[in-house]
Length: 111
Image (tube, one colour):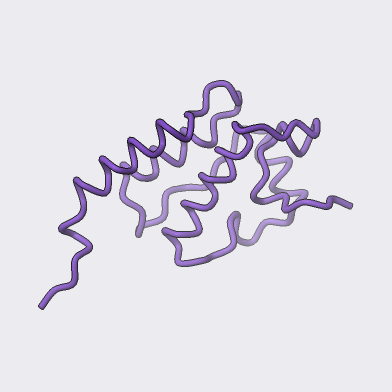
């Protein structure tokens, strides 16, 4: 059996053992999903083998109601099929900084 967490792992790492910065970016996208869903397991209701088959067919987790569309767009870029098309962590930091600045007021505590 697999010795790594399938639901957090990029397809090329699952299929070919290709663990790179770009496969880490995929996993970061999954982490964003976990944050938005307050810790829910990714791919709810799917087994590891279901996830592997679904990913090969182009499936990606849908946007949750609690997830702003802009943040989901960032997540989707992390889950691009071709590793070289995924963003860098520098780019993600820049985009997330901008996202935080743009939405900061929405998350401040109300009196």
